[in-house]
Amino acid sequence: CLGSNAITLVMDHLDAITDGIDLPHSLQTEETPWLQFALNPFPELFQPGFDNVKAKPKDAFLRKPLSDTQLATAWKYLSMDAPVGGMLGMATYGGKVNSIAPEATASAQRDCIIDMACNAGWMDPSGEPPTLDWLRKFYAALFADTGGVPVPNENSGGCMINHPDTDIADPEWNKSGVPWYTFYYLNNYPRLQQVKKEWDPLDIFHHALSIRADV
Image (cartoon, rainbow, N blue to C red; front, side):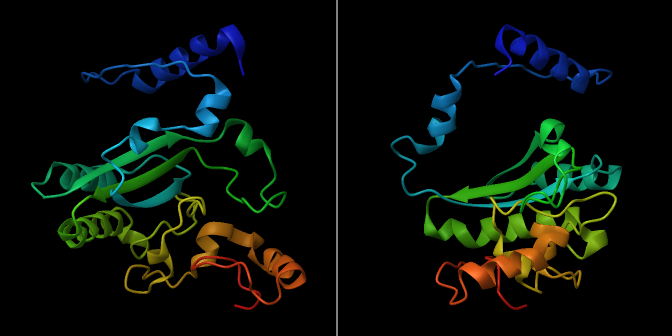
């Protein structure tokens, strides 16, 4: 959507990210038509052979970069000898997204700079317990100072409902005392409840983390 200037903007952005970091890294770019990407963003994840893959993401919005303590935690979990297939992903966030007022839509996170996610997957059912154990402990350790979850504050901005994580509603993993809906909707939840009462009072459309008409 940025025309011939797109690649220049991307390269300038990547140069800024790696500026002053004297570490080896690789760079790979790929140009894809917008509609093709929108309809099938990650075809490598859905190719034959991956039909039986199960995965769990645990994401967090960041208002500031990870602290040194959090980076040390990430290194610990990503370098440990564990029988899991997991990763830590970070996507730059903000720009035009952050120009919208928090109360303008259901998506209230309008001042974050990174969308981060701890991800893990498994194909064999026997891989589920160790994978979930590693993933949950990794995420909890990253946010140990706030009850194992990214409580909205000056550093974190909660979670993205596009990546629903029922652990946020489970006191075993959310020890912050902050209710799950605050992580996803911040201060917009009461107004969304009114919409729910008006248009779906019988709760026909629901899932584990959907809007409740009543708390």
